Length: 333
Image (tube, rainbow, N blue to C red; front, side, top):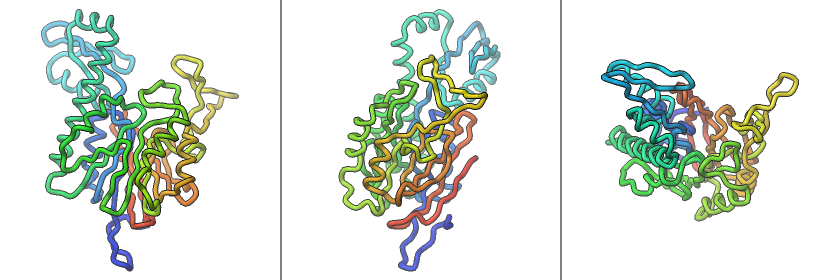
């Protein structure tokens, strides 16, 4: 396999990309992703969705320099600015958002779920705006582009930040075809089929198929095409995850004879579109535990997996030449 830029017999230089997905707001993981452009010596970096965090954590000011926080089920006392900053960094590594407030303000917010949701989405937009600014700063003086789209966990009003960016390095791919290096048309779609979690952008398979057909509009030749679809094709092994009982709240794993059961959770619509058009490459994620590479017909499908909550970045380096995937390398760090 080829991992570094080289030229084939016809003199065509390989395009080297780094792909990661499902970082769910993790500050540390995002910075690793951005640094991957230089570290892995790639031409471009691609993010495949679920860029928004999942939770808002209140930090309660009790008195003077004393605070408390409940994080991952444990209530902790915090004393002093350095300890407060350390807790904020832990929260941001987990991908969560945080707000510091007084006790009475916390009670008032708890009685108004709409206020919590509004704050959550504002903090999501602010973090994404900071990431875009950081990308422009870190990628300055290079030709590297950051291609980014949302996933099913990303609310549209957070993704609206992408619609208004003015950047030399950040390319909004949401729901459209973008050309990479004038050689590779990349179709993008962040919607998913239904999940047990009632996420912001999940739809029935028939509707998802319509989104996917719209996403590939404008591609005449799929020989060198890339599909950056958040959800993997159904039953391709890259969509295997614990089988859940959707009737409980929250959904619980199904265990038979002491053994946790697994099942495919990908999309039949995605599989149909991939089999129909047979792009050169499909980049996907969504199912964090199903890391790997498979073939669906002629299409190479890659899911790098995700361990964002530990601050670990899972990704994949892919070398491309027109019409073929020259090589790939899974990464973790």
